[in-house]
Length: 486
Ligand SMILES: NC(=O)C1=CN([C@@H]2O[C@H](COP(=O)(O)OP(=O)(O)OC[C@H]3O[C@@H](n4cnc5c(N)ncnc54)[C@H](OP(=O)(O)O)[C@@H]3O)[C@@H](O)[C@H]2O)[C@@H](O)CC1
Ligand SMILES: Nc1ncnc2c1ncn2[C@@H]1O[C@H](COP(=O)(O)OP(=O)(O)O)[C@@H](O)[C@H]1O
Ligand SMILES: [K+]
Image (cartoon, rainbow, N blue to C red):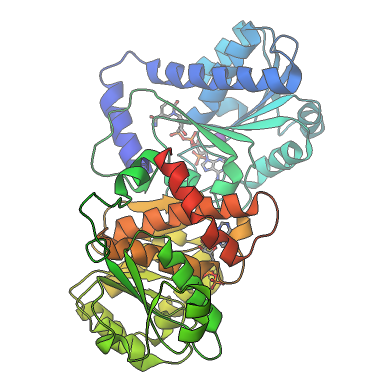
């Protein structure tokens, strides 16, 4: 499991550790890890460290200090290092002295802007130490020309702790920001490194262990890895039968959208339940494609027992079916049209788990805000929805977030690919996650393991070329095998 901690938690852990260590020891650990990552990258982009050109963007805080000490280490290995100082009188004193001792140079970026951008243009590597977890708001205007020059330059850009300008705790991008190829972060991932839109600016992320004593409880985010998902996935035991494995009911599709029913069933059949029951007007289309489906036209209450329901994909305006499903005393996944048709009080009154799976537009409609507001504030939005509905909420998108009904760390999933932005792929996810619910996973586990498999399946289906939602469903077994190491 990968975790991310808030700035406040990181600061507390830092204080606790600093009290036990000699002054400056933590920054030296950070700088050593940072310099090692930079040296490795320089090997790739410039052939070697010796003789390479490194430019440091140095702000007024400890983030700049990290960059200066790392720059000193690279200078000692023969790199030509220039520090561009945004606030020369406030730059980290010890770091400046170390860089100068190692033969590095400094330049006042404000006083010599042309020389500063020219250095960046000719660099092999730019280290962004403008601002880290102490930053507020987007980049200040004096830093913007440096960030722009770095974006234009052919240099590899390495962000120190965070890309300067992103919001560490929320993943918001409130203004101008540095775009990095690699972010070297210290002690713990910060939420902004794992959540869009900020994540997109971080490039690949490397964590340097500096020994921070982080609390076992109290992470803001969790990201499942292969091993975590493998432990969650239901595998039939020798004594299993189809009913013990769980039956998932799919109440989806309409005369207008029969395909949504087919795709939800396609996901459900690959989700681990022992049987899939379909209720709705698209029975013929479902049976034609998946003859193993148990089809009923008698409505959810008389369709036979299920261990979980999925309701909503392609449902049109069938509010009565949604209401019947919500009245069932088994876990329910509500997606698509179901989100619009579900009565909020009926959702809150449910005793069995509820998993809601909106995309940003649907989440915005439920919250009564603009879509952009959800996209810019994904973490706050998913938590707010979960609290309002007393339900687990899975917010879809380039990074998928799953917030539990009772708070706790939010699960984040980034296994997906933008090829998944194709009509019907959400229907496949709803069937898949619903099947995992029927197999006995909690709503948070079903949502996050479902999103994990769905994202991987999307990658396998696409492999760099467009894929349809049915291709994604067909690639789910490959994603299972990949996760289980089979
Ligand atoms: N935690 C740990 O365990 C460890 C932390 N370490 C490192 O320390 C870093 C945190 O250092 P920090 O606290 O000095 O804050 P930092 O990020 O340098 O920024 C503050 C300065 O930036 C300025 N500023 C603010 N907003 C700005 C903006 N939008 N655009 C431009 N400037 C802006 C602000 O100026 P002011 O508001 O005072 O005018 C202030 O001077 C952390 O990210 C990590 O790299 C490691 O060394 C070791 C272990
Ligand atoms: N840019 C993206 N990167 C990764 N995954 C994405 C991206 N865009 C969409 N997805 C995923 O694709 C699926 C789309 O679902 P949804 O928006 O409900 O589409 P539909 O209603 O057409 O089925 C979700 O699982 C979502 O997380
Ligand atoms: K930075």
